[in-house]
Figure 1 (spheres, helix red, strand yellow):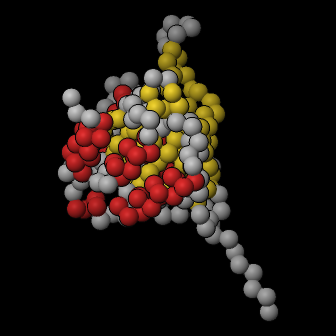
Figure 2 (cartoon, helix red, strand yellow; figure 1 turned 180 degrees about the vertical axis):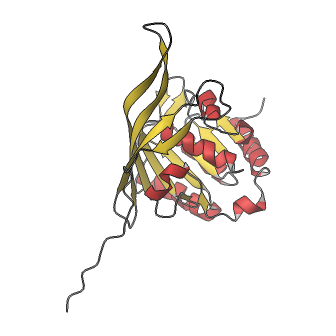
Amino acid sequence: MMARSEEVEALRRRLAGMSGDVFAETSVLPVPEAMTPLFPRGGLSRGTVVASTGAVTVPMAIIADVTRAGSTVALVGLPRLNLTAAMDMGADLSRVAVVTEPGVDPLEVAGVLLDGIDLVVLGPDLGHGRTRGPVPPSRARVLAGRARKQSSTLLVLGDWPNASVRIDSDVTEYRHVPARRSGFGRIGGFGVDVQVTASGARPSSGRFDLVAPDMGEESVLRLVAAHGSVQRPSRPALAVAN
């Protein structure tokens, strides 16, 4: 049986070999098209750390878009992440590596995967019901430097010291599709309020709807902007004294 470090290294090498040169040269990883106005560069900049709190729908949509564009993703400490839902949103699971139980040092595992993986998603779990806990600022700086050096992106579910971008999202309402029989139906989607705070820009926000395909449609779940709800980010205006 391989040791944990050997297993992680094997995953890293396998997924790193999938990324083509065209993707390695892209300086921004994609986000759902409706959300691009919220980000100063229209996506997640390579070499940065992004912290996401609240609804997991937004990170899953990002995972789907990144893999659909041909880039690779590693999931660390996310045993309860619904990969079927990610696939329903268009994720290419052949480009996703999963480390369900990263052991006592998930930060080390994430650091290894940043060397060659386009997007590393770090969750709160150590496995067996244990949680990761707060991240020391010194370790956060090391991981941020690793991401910057390797031109990879670290997406953390939870708080992270001095993250370049913070995404806060909350589910606001569910929409139901009624069935022909009274009292029966299915969830047809829900609304999500999202706020993005990036270094050097004012916070931007928007309301988005997760729309499920109609019966018989061969399409994927998608996030669409609610009409007139997206507020684009802007840089602070400078007042010049005469």
